[in-house]
Amino acid sequence: MTHAPVTGRPLKIAVLGAGVVGTEVIRALVTDSHDLGARIGAAVELVGVGVRDVAADRDAIVPTSLLTSNAADLVAGADIVVELMGGIEPARTLILHAFETGASVVTANKALIAAHGPELYEAAERAGRDLYFEAAVAGAIPVVRALRESLSGDHVRRVLGIVNGTTNYILDQMTTDGLDMAQALSQAQELGYAEADPTADVEGMDAAAKAAIIAALAFHTRMPLAAVAREGITTVTKEDVDAARDAGYVIKLLAIVEDTEAGVQARVHPSLVPVGHPLAGVHGAFNAVFVEADDAGELMFYGRGAGGAPTASAVLGDIVSAARHRAHGGLAPAESAYAAIPIAAAAEAHTRLQIRLVVADRPGVLAQVSTALADHGVSIEAVRQHDTPAARTHGGVELIIITHRARQADLDATVAELAELDAVIKVASALRVEGV
Ligand SMILES: NC(=O)c1ccc[n+]([C@@H]2O[C@H](COP(=O)([O-])OP(=O)(O)OC[C@H]3O[C@@H](n4cnc5c(N)ncnc54)[C@H](O)[C@@H]3O)[C@@H](O)[C@H]2O)c1
Ligand SMILES: N[C@@H](CCO)C(=O)O
Ligand code: NA
Image 1 (cartoon, protein in one colour):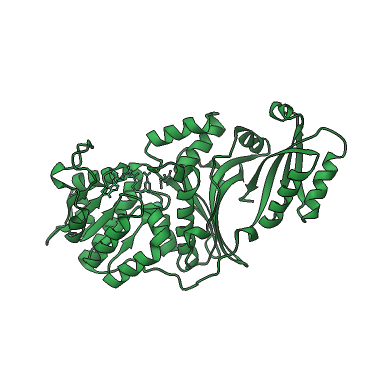
Image 2: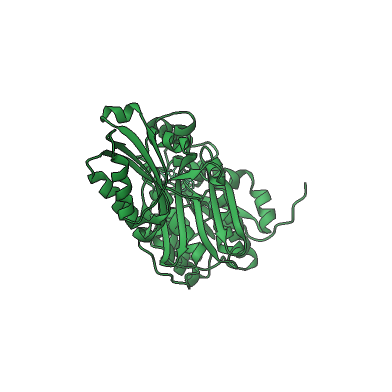
């Protein structure tokens, strides 16, 4: 095999963090630098690895001679800084320092991009350097590039994404293997999918950060993380999964960003997705991002969104891009936030609900329930009644209602009113139905 000749001083690459992702990026930089150099058209050299504890046990591929606990000095001498520590600080300060000292930056850190994206873009622009973050959304799937570059001539209307591998793995195991949430989470942790603190996965914070990033890129606007409405999966039960299945749906944690008449909206919540929708077939820790755009129509990006090697693939692609620019000129796209779209309140979202009630088994109950819905202008698409053991322990039967599309505020008010009816013993759950 021949490679293009690579001449000149090697570009210096510093990696910060040698965890699940960092180790795989280092593996490629150590074993594959020749190919990478040929693709870039310039040699690259791993010059250091910033870690917390130099003496800690780690994969033998990580060269001990390159380890340092002095990340600031390492950053100061690098051409490309690859931040894979996670968290806000010291990652933010080190990245700002990298730009000040003339380096380009590659990061997988969605929490940081979602919270401080504008500041980091501005620092990159001031320095005339690149900020790349493909791995921050949906791991290996090249969706950041797709939104930032390929679709930048189109008008994206809506994006529905399964963007958290851990929760998709958990919900899928609950659906297909009947595993409980705790068992499935510990498997996801062993497989290297979960965040350092898995609360970020199961409570939807990780997906919310990705939703904020997607919304900003898709709609050329800023989407503060605090404006993303968020619910995690911890309240989803086996009964919810079973009821969804009976009605022809699977439960997925969806990140939804929409450009609506009321403004731009981003939300993350467990959602019933019809079994025939492409997102329903996304199993295990896989991710998928379903984009609806004016000219392109529907697109779906599918692949591995978590795990060391898949995430490293995205990071390495960014390293190649940044290195090409350092060697031959060019710049990553700057922040595009010109559209400055107002943010619509979460209560203004339009969705449908599957409401599971435990109701008294007596005449007139259905009439009371349907009046409560009608009072709020919410119409019913389907109603099913079941005699389940769980409902019987509460002295009633299970009534499952699927509504037509309505305003979130009206749906919330409906559920609150249902909870007050004497005929309703318990509102077991109210889950949104999406993708229809
Ligand atoms: N694991 C995945 O599947 C995945 C996928 C996409 C994105 N990410 C993102 O990639 C980043 C890294 O994730 P990970 O799974 O490799 O995490 P990890 O916890 O396995 O690794 C992070 C490493 O950084 C080190 N570190 C933390 N603070 C440090 C500091 N101040 N100085 C030096 N080292 C420090 C930790 O000791 C640890 O070894 C995070 O931003 C994460 O959100 C991870
Ligand atoms: N913890 C994240 C890693 C990828 O960002 C997940 O499970 O998807
Ligand atoms: Na990606």
